[in-house]
Figure 1 (cartoon, rainbow, N blue to C red):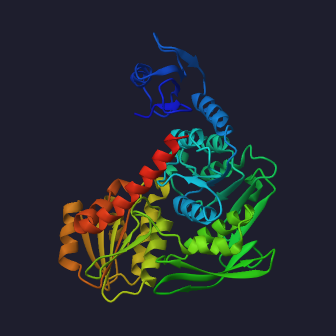
Figure 2 (cartoon, helix red, strand yellow; figure 1 turned 180 degrees about the vertical axis):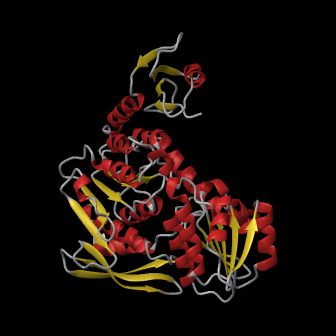
Figure 3 (cartoon, helix red, strand yellow; figure 1 turned 90 degrees about the vertical axis):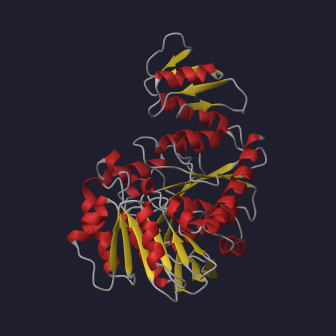
Length: 449
């Protein structure tokens, strides 16, 4: 049930909004459970209704009202790839100096963003909020709720193609996060790939780059070590250089997230030394690019929350850089929401495997298996096609041993994290317990708001 409540406290007595696929029964349920009124497109007999052609717009305005009761500044992050990682890096940087509030999961859709905007703790100085670009027309409304002082746009890719139909519409949706920003608000973009400055409704743009020193912040001397990614941050304005180590992180695109976090820190007048300290304390969480190591020296690259072709290629490339003593095994599944480009995206993934050091490919999903038939995998890599998790686990038990690296990457629908949990239960339990504790701490804090 996706009934969305505008509710400044956790007590009964709220206004519920009809969003997404909410039904009449959902609305009746909301009233039975304490809603004073409901906002709907069409009146429902027997219920206290506020009729609007755009309930989501009403919701955004009401959430913004409650958000503005807080004096906290805000950072908003959107894009197709890298939102959650960038959000957590930013929070790591800012909490070195400020009292921040940051949802410990990836809750980034309309009713979740609205809930966070309504429940900013009184002691919070900065809200760090992720915003989804996946529903046409909603990104600008969520930005209105959050009222950010600075926005970060991560990589824009062909995700959610089923909803948008074209890459151009996805670009427009992402850039719409700048609608209604205050005149002094800034937006941070990656100069290496962002080309749509004319679509940004702000003149205050901060650029970051992996290799262009003309950007406001750029990286130099990027090195992949056993400990992680080492690089220098070059700040153009001050002409200063700051060395950074992202521990246990090996995918180079994460340097862009770090540069963006550095830019946000500077925006809020955090010292470069504190920013560096925050970045070096950052750790991946859960099943997002998280490198886990078992007692018998197996390295697990868990990146199975979601996927597009670009992120799969990045994960494969990152695994090539991680020092291991044994084999490299890729467990890959279909990339969903590819739309008309789906076949091309899966071909790109198979070609990336061909160009990698992986010696075993375990594939699940009709789309990637068809791609394997179109683009035969080279002799250096054994292919095992599976129909379910049981077959994946059998393949891992037969082929995985100490010293190996195993990559798990697919769209969330394939739930590859369940394979990790069944294969290495104690390791995953440790990760899950840490996540639950963090979420509980966040939840208890906002209940006091």
